[in-house]
Image (cartoon, rainbow, N blue to C red; front, side, top):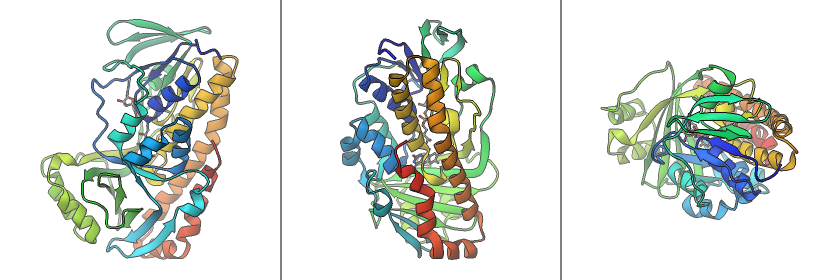
Amino acid sequence: MSGRARILIVGGGIAGLGLRVALRQRGFRPDLIERETHWQPPGTGIAVQPNAMRVLVGLGLNTAMERAGTTIRRWQFRDQTGAVLCDIPLEPLWSRVGPFIGIERAKLHAILRSDGARWRLGTWIVAMDQDSRRVQVTFNDGSTGDYDLVVGADGLYSGTRRLALGPSEPIYGGQMVWRSLSPLPLPEPDSVQFWLGDGCFFGLCPVGSGTYGFANITGPRGYDQVEGRLERLRARFDGFGAAVQDFLTSLERDDQIHCGPIEWVEAEQWCRGRVALIGDAAHAGSPMMGQGGSMALEDALVLAECLQAAPEVEVALSTFVARRKPRVGWVRQQRLAVGETLRLPPAVRNASLRERGWSTFYDRFKLLTAPP
Ligand SMILES: Cc1cc2nc3c(=O)[nH]c(=O)nc-3n(C[C@H](O)[C@H](O)[C@H](O)COP(=O)(O)OP(=O)(O)OC[C@H]3O[C@@H](n4cnc5c(N)ncnc54)[C@H](O)[C@@H]3O)c2cc1C
């Protein structure tokens, strides 16, 4: 397709920003709108896995990522006291794909925005109408625009999904998560660690400037009010070993901790006419594989490639869906399997991780070592 195609990207998260860079590299000049009035991704971290880094290499952003983050070489499962159940080297799996980087989310987003292109903040679509030639959108300020393609990269509660495909609510995944950043370095700063308890786990991931901690508890959906949150979190994990205690002790304020539910979206359709969904808007899942950001970036790259190669939008979108659905479906299956393992009685789960942790882990990720 010609670079003159009018493309609107809705949402300035990992998927939307990644798509914008990938399209600009191919000569397109998309518009991007973001609902928030300021760029404020939550003050937490993210594990950017090698298949995401492969996309970022293609976008020319890998050096900035490696400078701002920490290179992770091992993935560890421990019991809640800190005893190692399995210590998996990442090099044999990912050596031909790229590094595994832990980074603050704010820094990842800033790197994805660093191409100097413009965007419209505080903007969203209130109405959308399409025919065979164009999509006409009305923005919240009353202005309108005509586009050849609208891409909904607007996350779990995607307004684009609702406008194009009708109402569909995310599903509660049965877990609540508390996330925060500490300047405290992790004692073994080349590893991402999962400390497994009974019905809960605590994750620790180095992120360049310190450590990203995430506490995950299985149970009903709830609201944990900000006041007193830190004390409650410390009390809930007081049976955990030293690195978790040190992390929790290093936090000072309730508002350093972000709490929310794990939610899933499984949109059966990712496209309708000239409207497409990518990233969490199309297929958010539980973070059990740490692959949501990778899938968002792979979607962005593949969609840009399809648009460049195809003669028209409809062909590009059907190729995009055909290329992406099997891989995203594979990740969904692996996530469910990890969730089942973590729900086993601790003694059974721990024995299984000691005996087969490495090989199961490699099997879960090996398909993702091939390009998307
Ligand atoms: C607890 C937890 C831990 C995770 N850990 C990892 C990890 O370690 N590694 C990993 O790869 N993934 C991880 N993920 C998943 C990852 O965060 C998501 O998959 C990823 O952020 C999806 O990016 P996105 O751009 O599709 O959506 P989002 O990040 O949700 O971005 C959507 C953007 O669209 C904007 N927006 C929303 N509605 C509108 C609208 N109507 N109009 C305009 N703009 C709008 C939003 O403000 C936002 O900026 C984790 C997820 C959770 C919940």
